[in-house]
Image (cartoon, rainbow, N blue to C red; front, side, top):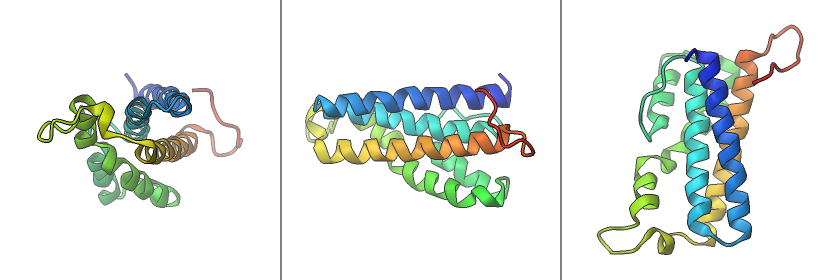
Length: 153
């Protein structure tokens, strides 16, 4: 898969995942809301990473984003957005993935009991912001800068 294809693919996944938690929130399905939000955040971050090279098979894309920032690989105009994406994606990484799948195994709390309205609302807002940033980065790196018109994904 080439970088542009992977970037568009990951962004498409993120956009589809971000639509699901909004519906789950309406039905007060907190677990599903957090689960889909986490998936949206992970794929949003991975779509940004794909602009620069291969995406690691990891549930912690914030680490790869931090590496890109440290290498100065990101256009300066996007650095603030990528730093925000790192901040948003870090708490939605591997640890959250495990909580969503298994709950709190030490306290014997299943995933459906672990999340409430507040955690679902926070996860949904994080997902929305992450997908918005990923879309901005996608447009920046795939749009011809002279026309101002975004390319199709």
